[in-house]
Amino acid sequence: MMKKLLLLCLPFAATVALAQKSDDAAKYAALITQQGLKEKLTILAGADMEGRETASPGQKKAAAYIEEQFKKFGLKPGNGDSYQQLFPVYFDALSDQLLRVNGKAFSWDKDYNFSLANINKDYKTYSNFVFAGYGIVDSATKTNDYAGLDVKGKVVLVLEGGAKITAPAGRAARFFNPNLGKITAAQKNGAAGLLIVSANFPRVTPSQTKSRMLLKSTPEPAMFTASISDEVASALLGYTAKLPFADLKGVAKGNYVAELKIGAAKTTETRESSNVIGMIPGTDKKEEYVFLTGHYDHLGKQGNVIYYGADDDGSGSVGVLQMAEAFATAAKKGNKPRRTLVFMTVSGEEKGLLGSEYYSEHPTVDLSKASVDLNTDMIGRGDSSRKADTLNYIYVIGHDKLSSDLAVINEGVNKKYINNLALDYKYDDPNDQNMIYYRSDHYNFAKKGVPVLFFYDGMLGADYHKPTDTVDKIQFEVMARRAQLVFHTGWVIANRDEMLKRDIPLNMPSR
Image 1 (cartoon, rainbow, N blue to C red):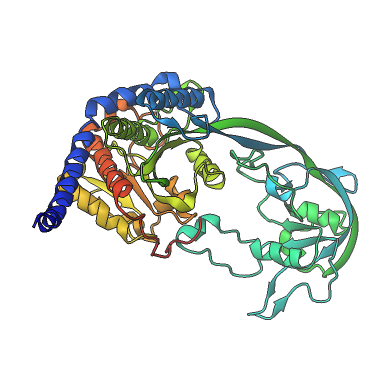
Image 2: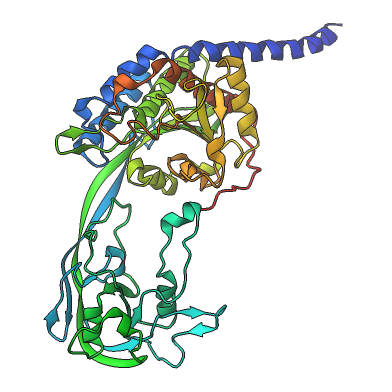
């Protein structure tokens, strides 16, 4: 009889325990307050942080502040004995650009230009050239401008244009290069270099001579590529006077001899940035992980004008801090997570997701054991383009990708605890023209197969990337609710029996 009674009581005990755990989640989520968010954001997005540009003194101050908070909450360091994961960043620059034909020097942007990625370091001299018309190889139209030409080890001269090329629509248009086919054909035929004759000289807009911030210094190209004017082309083809671009179409294909000296000095500047990582160790599933991330960098200063970045992404970063404090309080009172929680604020996001990319290639834990990344990037403002519920919403990106568990859990806690924020999935459209899926740090986790949810307020207009993105414009009431939604989602995923299923192929093309 007693045995039967015990068996009958077990389901009830489990239900009580589950209800207790649920009640605990609500109790600790309530620690994510408007006041706490405002206090932290006032510091992180304050003038002392100077806009937190990656690898700047302001960014380093911000990293130290976040580390101090993690220590204060009792989080363990997330990178061995350190709370920071340092990583190098590089700036490459061109100087002393040179293009000389038969002893005559030509002018940068008046007669020629090239990019950092497409020119060799230092200077090289060439004497053998092949004019290959438009340089087109296209089996569909049975065109081969290289037929009968030996260009191996030589510099090829081609005219721009020659075929109607339609720029692709949507996201691919951002990466479209109308000369890619010409470059590919020259490389396949073994050319040492490619000179593309352009009618668009002199340039109206100065050509870039400095790279954006990079995780790797620009490698040397296998084949150099440059754009040249019709005057440079005329000299290479043996004409003493300039041949207009239209007349160059009539020049015979074949071999030509001239002396070309081309190149530039390249310099590389190395700086250092960091991701800040704190952890709450799990219990029975401590070798599995739940990530809560945001980026703490912004745009820094232009002159004396500070770009504060209160919403972008001061809001997400202090959301991570408040969630860390709430989870840490729960752990101290006996409600430890089953899985290890990893709280990470990354830098380099505004420079191309550099910090999260570095982390994904140099992870401090096994990412195959990461159940999820919950990424908060801009959660403190409203989207003025919305027709309704201009504050009672959050854009959720990733709900239909990688794991069928994501939406069920997120929607469930939203209904149970948050009084139904509108969860808007419009940016999960693979054809989204804003490419939001690619524009925050969750992307580098998704690339590794980790299920992700990205929480975002959609503030693309108004003060986006302007000095006016300031603390006084943050809507702290809805910011707290959004952070609580992420907290509850993290709580459930950290404590459920199974890791999230990885059962949906990613339906987004690569970045």
